[in-house]
Length: 344
Image (cartoon, rainbow, N blue to C red):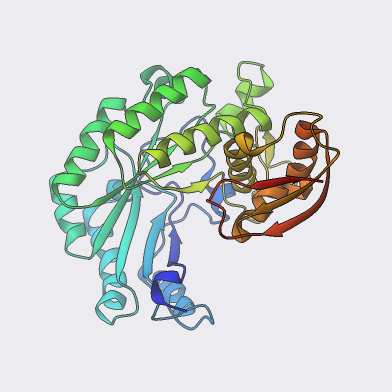
């Protein structure tokens, strides 16, 4: 398979809550990552990278990156940052990996730390922006402002970093209208990538207490899918890739009672992509009652989106057309996002 077709290999190193100045109202990094909030040392980093290198999935033809996730990397002491980056740097110099990415807060970067990271092939910095509405940020106890995000993106651009932004619809004080306003602000900032993580209520968080006291009502699954689908559409039409939708599953996150409420679904990203596909293909559908039976042709790779999760998409298609679906056939001559409907 050509290199351009191979999926990138990203080896994550989790540093839950390390460097974080406080705990946000929604945050429980240990559950999300299945890693304890203990300082990680060079030996552990080497162990993680050695295991990755010897994995059957390791392939030098793939794009290969090491990523520090889960904490505020640039709020670590400079000596600690240097230690971790130097450990990874040996693997980069050896040709095993090509670059490093880190995640941090919009108010936690400065010239000194950016210069340090550039020296160790850190090419991508992801910022936990969450929202561009200051009232939402205050209620969520983020400790930074929308202006901090704007300034951080500018500074990262000036230093030549690729910039990712992480957004969280459904936080306290948020609304559909406010989140779409956030999306408009993000499009103006034009990051290199975006992640969408709808807020869920996790055990042990302050948000869980708010939910218990009925001070916070999370988004429904249907509402979160709709907001993320529209946000994804707007971002990608503006040329900004959405590289992740929904929290990634982890063993501890899936333990009974860890997720108390909110729009959690093991295939949330697929639900969103299927929703987008069905909304795009609306114009391809015959009017309700115009046919008793239909045959559907669609691009091969989009047939799963057409079918939807557990065939929910087919049931929706039948409801909208009033017709029985006799056959689904792959047809790569059809433009992406569309389908050819033949009445029988």
